Amino acid sequence: MKLNDFIINNKDTMIEELMRFISINSVYDEKTVTKDRPFGAGVAKALEYVAKLGEANGFKVDRCDGYCTELTIGEGKKTIGIFAHADVVPATGVWTDGPFSPFVKDGKVYGRGSSDDKGPFMAAFYAILALKNADLIKNYKIKLVVGGDEERGSRCLDYYFKNLKKEDPTYGFTPDADFPLIYGEKGIIDFFPQLSIKIPHVKSIKGGAATNAVCDKVEIELDDARELDKYLKENCVAHKTEGNIVKIFSLSAHGSTPELGVNAALKTLRILGNVYKVDKLTKLYEELSDTRGKAFGGYAHTKLMGETTYCVGMISYEKDVLSFSVNFRYPETVKYKEFVENFDKHFGTKSTVGHESKYLLFNPKSPLVKTLMKAYLRESHDYFHGPMTIGGGTYAKHCKNTVAFGALFPGREYVMHQPDEYMPVNDIVKSACIYARAIYLLGKLK
Image (cartoon, rainbow, N blue to C red; front, side, top):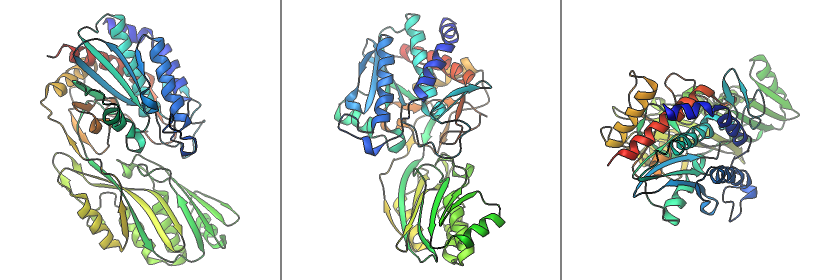
């Protein structure tokens, strides 16, 4: 009760600190990358904010060459690791207010990063402060590590462990997914198909901001946009025409749940196929719209980890070559190379393949999982939901002895990577209470 009282009594300060954190535009910025700022100026500013917050509250701080900020408190051979991230995905789409101008409305904190992952980080931070205030950090240490590149492949944690040779946690969790707990994560690979095709009147196409998010805006340059503009108006398609430039808009979603979005890249293929009578584009639209892959023979399913998913995140067209990205997520039995080869054979494309994030499958009966579930149940009284597997990829894949634990509660709207992202204030407080109990119980494990 002392832990919860501390968190509740400091709720206003916690939300104020969170809003200051959200106000930092921490999207990766290639233009401002330097040796000391490997992910650009915005991410560096966010990591420095975490460092100053830690110093002000009595943590030992390591800035980790600009890749992460590590906050350490306590002493002992046992290490409880908590892994959050300061970087955010680009703020695409139409926002009610500025994505980096956070505000509270109807009990929710709005802004890019509020739920992914700045709000959950702040919950974990205040959970540790509650333990510190109650003098309950004894015979173990806590490392709260905040990375700067989770959204682009987690080079931050790779550097943290491989280059800086940081110790593995005895027990760890990342507050960057769902409650109650994630014990399995699908494998993830980005691949990049190219198709030689002539699209009449189209000079170029470019769209999408990230491979792991549903494309929500496409810009098309034509030699004459009048016919396309007329079609779009007649069919009530959200768009904007400026001279011979046409922009088509839709709804983004996280790459692990592409069915929750409306894909502007695929919509563009359908529209151009209809207007300019290009059957290949129509086929691409029809079959890639099946985000599970059944329409093109790319489907797989397992009892433990569920179904395959395919998310088209980015698209481009120039010099009669159509290129796009596919964020492919798959269960433990899939050999991704075979699936990419089958994809190319089916569509007549040629693909290059990015870095693989291998699947993770943790023992649901392990002391770590059982302890975290105990903390969740004691604080939430939610006896209806159990530990699960997901399509998303978290820091748990990059850390030993670590699982994803919160902070999205069952039944809540999924708004990560979407416009008007938010996190309820009460959920931030509740998460902090869960994390405080979880860390305390992990600290008592032998």
